[in-house]
Image 1 (tube, helix red, strand yellow):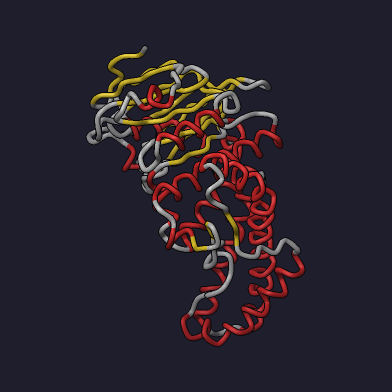
Image 2: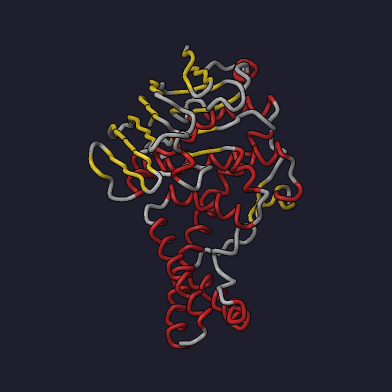
Length: 361
C-alpha cells in the first residue's frame, strides 16, 4: 500500500500543502522547526484520526484559523481509498470514499501506518505506562476488535473505581469486579499473545540491524486465559483492602507493562540511545512484516528524525532490510546526505521550509 496524493490545510504550520508522493523512499528534509514533523503527523492522522503529539484538536489547528483539514488517496492491491478529515476544536469529521466513517477501525484498516518518532523513543524510558502505550499501538493495528476491548475495559475500570470510592454497595462492586476480571483478562491475553507471536522475528531483525550484538527478551508472558485469570484474581484478593482505602483499582493491565530485556538487562536502565532506537526500529519492522502476513498488504512506515542516535552501519542495515519489503517509507532529517552516506538513493525528495513545499526532485 502507498499514499499517492496528500493535502493539508491549516494543520499546524502546514498551509495549502498539496503533494504527490511516490512509492519507495520519500525523504523529507529541511532545517529544524520548519514543519517536517508536522507533515509526518498529518500523514499519521489519516490512519489514526489523531496526532501523535497533540492531545487536543485545537493544538493541530493553525493559530488564527477555525479548522484544519487533511486528506489523501491510498492505493493497495485490493482497492484505492480516498480519505478526508476536517478538524475543529470540538470535533472531527471523517469521510472514507465520500461516506462518513462508521468508526475509527475503518481508518486503521483503510490506511495502516506504523510510526517511529522521538516521542516513542521517550516512551521506552517512561516506565510501565510507556511500554503499555507502545504495545497497545501495535496490537490495535493487528487485532481488529482490540479497540472495542480496550474501550470496554476502561469503562468497566471507571465504574469499579467509582464504586470503590463510594464504598457502599458490596453486591454491585462484586458484579463489576467480575466484569473487570473478564475484560482485563482479554486485554492481557491480547498483549501477551502478540508478544509471543513476534518475539522470534523481532530478535532476528534486531540481530541483523546490530550485527547480532544484542538479544531481546521479554519477562514471562502467560497466554493461557485460565492462568491469566487465576493470577489476576489472586492479585485483586491481596489488594482489596488497599483498594478500599485509596478508592481505585491498583492491579490490572492499566498499571502493568511488559519488561523488555536487552542482553539480560532491563532495556530502560542499561541500553544506550542507539540500542534503544535499534530496538524500536526492529519492533516496527516486525510489526510491518506480521501485518503483511495477516492482511496481504503492507503498512506505510513513518520515521521522524531518522538517523539520530544511529551509526552509519545500523542506518545502512536498516535500509537494506526494509527496501523492497516496505512499499512506502517517509522519513525526516535535517541532513539530506543521509541516504548518500548509506549508499542508497531516495525515490522522492521533499524540502520543507516554514510549512511550505519549496522544491521536489
